[in-house]
Image (tube, rainbow, N blue to C red; front, side):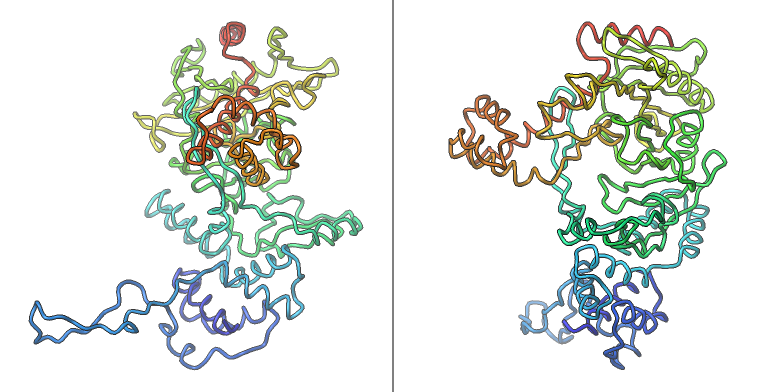
Length: 553
């Protein structure tokens, strides 16, 4: 397709989705030309003068029928009358325009260079931040929080900030087990590193300047990105990023959506200040303020210590969205009360991690109860189960992964009762488990080695893309009955012992069920990973230790 046709189709798409107005079409056409380093060709008079020209029809094709014809008369329709244009493919169109940018010398011939070119194009077609904030606030005031987030999320998807096509490449399934149905995903949405980018990064000399300070800073809004050859390191383009300013605990935060979402309407709420993560009264107040603003969403925070924290501890931020996680469906057990907080109901959840759920219609009292639990846990040592609050030098080991939402009488999001989930975490290490005693143990690293952060605490596994090829090779060897090949095939060596156990446990395994069996066994591994992360195990010793902590509350 010629560049003119691609740009016209893209501008039409932007108009159809109300990213721009019909009056912006010629301006947008020329702005996209500039973004890809071109000065032509011209769009054509028909398109310039007629907003409906070159727009794919929507709905069924209308066929004129003779008004005098009888009801049973046959109507002959020529095939060319039923030809419907192919639907617009945003990703393919942006890819072709990025190719034009490379050819014109305004983009690097790398994966990240092409992506920066594509986002530069979409930045032209995305409404200005002030306009986005104005519309969001107006909808919030007149139609309510659900309508406001529906509009904002659609905008972020239509502007290609939320990468719908990439997210669709993820592989997802559920696995039933002791802890209910766990959600499993193999993350294929984030682009893999281009070898040319890796090589460029190796040649780059550090300059010491890094702007924005990280990918969560609000200064990312509109940032053009930079290549791996930059002295400041590579950074993705963010011309089409839009952030809604919100106030939490009297401080400025920003609401945006994750470009590579792990669940429905996966949002990120980041401080306007580049400061470290922290779990305390202030952060818990922020979580409560957020669900008062957008009660249909849950909101949570990664823990604030290495090993048990998330991947970015340098920037204070939260994650939320419209999703009910397996943890939220876990059965309550070991109910308890706290004398100082009579309006708060507490239970231990039947969940592999050690999670206390607190509920109350009294927001202030729930906050105080949460702070009490966090403070008590930070000081708690129980060497019988390996929990040590601090080293002799004062290094802390205990913290909490908190999640807050508002629920109705049936336990669904959006009601008037506040619900707090406090997952107790401890990041101590040992010679046997140098990556963490309460971290995935070595026997499961072939499936999951990374930290167990907020999302996985709640029962949604985010597994690495390498597993697609590796598990495929495991399946091939098991179906061929060639178990010895598991140790010699580089793709399956790390899985060999586990794969032999799978084969022994499933003598019925054949081509019809192999994929399901392997998927279920991966889900069971994730269950074991979560059990490793739990500080109070579900045995006699662990239950007694759990009760000792409850007693001090």
